[in-house]
Image (cartoon, rainbow, N blue to C red; front, side, top):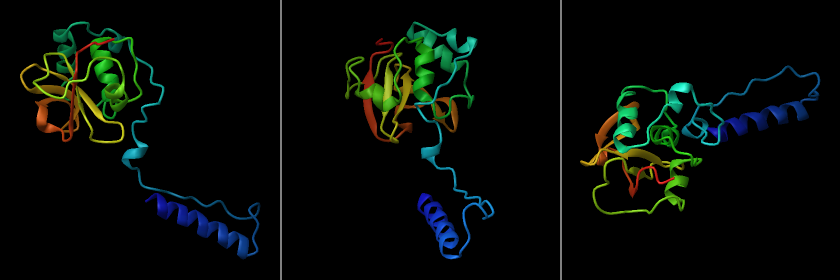
Length: 168
């Protein structure tokens, strides 16, 4: 899609250049492109936390309750790392789930059932994905049927592993 947009812009530029019109006299042209996954949920975006978000948890049960109380919400679609950070009331911020996974913030485990409250990671996009384990093979996460929800750990593809919860 981006290639088509670039080609449209190049064609417009060529028409202006070879058609004898100048950029100053040409009518403004609108160039559109489809929204893609790369256009959504920039992890570098500055997002202000609401007072409700800041009333987050410090225990595994409270972190899970944070997700459970938002079951069905789409408010954090594309912001899984923010959701787990708020659920655990973490001081540490990561730009994305994959950055969190790759960081020295907590020991990475690639085997075993993630314990209750653990961060669970998948490599499903350039930014990765993260949720919170329920301790029984399930996870609370964003993007479960398009919203915050509970699913089996295998719901998402390309499992990476887990890190202890609230490993600030």
